[in-house]
Image (cartoon, rainbow, N blue to C red; front, side):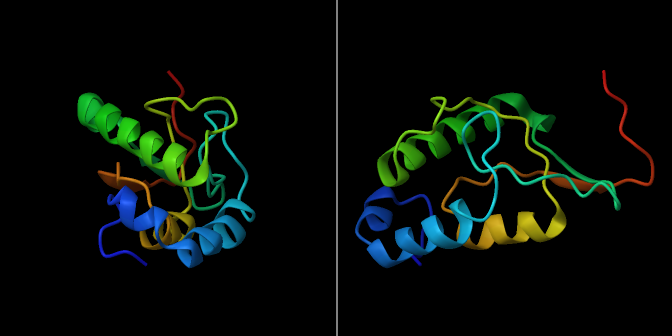
Length: 119
């Protein structure tokens, strides 16, 4: 894996890593409506991840993530969306941060015992 996940050139010149991501990550998890990787929420443990604590920073990081996705893996199916509103299980979030070459947008994970309020 490239030392810097934000280094697009390093990613493009690492075909084994790209193939690993395509087979082990892209093929295993569903795509969200925004066309990027999206794991289902952990409905039993009520674990959610919020990206909107700093909307401007999140927007910039998601745009960078889209740029990386387009150059390395091709255009997302619907063109992508920035920022998407992602929710991940703890296990999927760990996998994402370790193996997926996106810019990290995470601020905090909230474990919840009750359903979230939908505003």
